[in-house]
Image 1 (cartoon, one colour):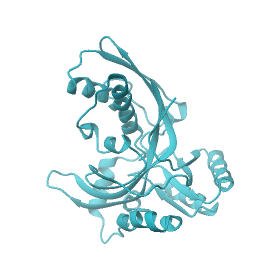
Image 2: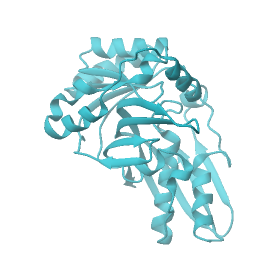
Image 3: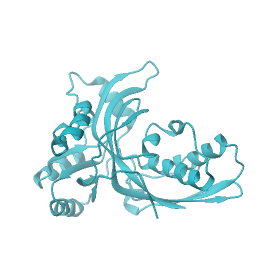
Image 4: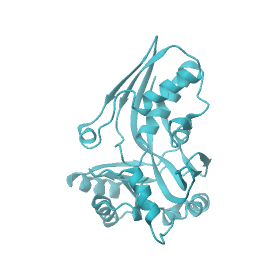
Length: 285
């Protein structure tokens, strides 16, 4: 079975607190976008095999483990263990989503493996959050208000069909360092994820006014600043970093504007793609 599995962006992302165990609580609006990895899964008699096809532009900047360290491998292992199955599978991943970009590229692969194995066997995993906080979201995708440590997911009004440019430079971000910087911020400006969720339902064409990401105040990357400025100069309604970085998305009213912007960023040496917000994670191919 082969599927295309979507990336996600944070239309808004705020950090609201820190728990005694060190985890941070968030408020966010997650959105799946039409930038995809391709994942194929085939049942075998025994063992888990994983193959990866990674474009050079990704591999040179962000090495992706293609063994038991990969979250897709861990997803298959969890699936078989939870269901008491002694068979195996062969997984192949063709990357189209940049890694270390704040777009859930690993988590969406894990969700795709769970989805495919579920379709192939008629079984499922009861606790996909064991693999990571973003994995349960990708099992449904679309537009969702997310809180807690990412485990509380509430679907909201559909925000699909919006035109985006998504771009990323070579700089990566350590999530742990980003959260340490968040903790050190004094009097930060907090994005209002709840207001965004409400506006998507009541006045979606103005929702971009509530886009924002607290991590932009904690992560200082030249690429992020340059990408945001370039997008806004090419008529983006809003440009925001996603996750803890380092990808940036810009919202455009017209596809031709987005194409012009993306071409300019590619000439500068950035990864850049035009896509749309989409209502689900998986497309069976």
